Length: 136
Image (cartoon, rainbow, N blue to C red; front, side, top):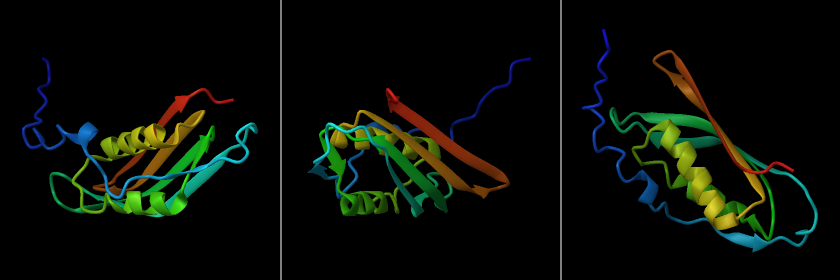
């Protein structure tokens, strides 16, 4: 017997995530060591979103690693960008993917990876990871 999946409570709650514009936007600075191959890791434990179904807050540790090309992310803009998620109803997996997609579009790194570790809710721990580009 095939199990049916009920997504009715979530229908249309995430349909526009890919087009969502988070403000303020990310900014970059010129990488003065463009020819060098090095790794940058940015981490915060102050990231929050809102569950799109319950309206309750979700808390996560966000770690972004990247190998810069022409640009570095301006760190204050990253802080303000991440704070822009505070009142947005978004699933944890979608938030993780959206952050990396926006980061890559702005910073254009050689390689990037994001990991989000979400505080347990209802006894379920969630860790989401996505990588893009070639790790040198």
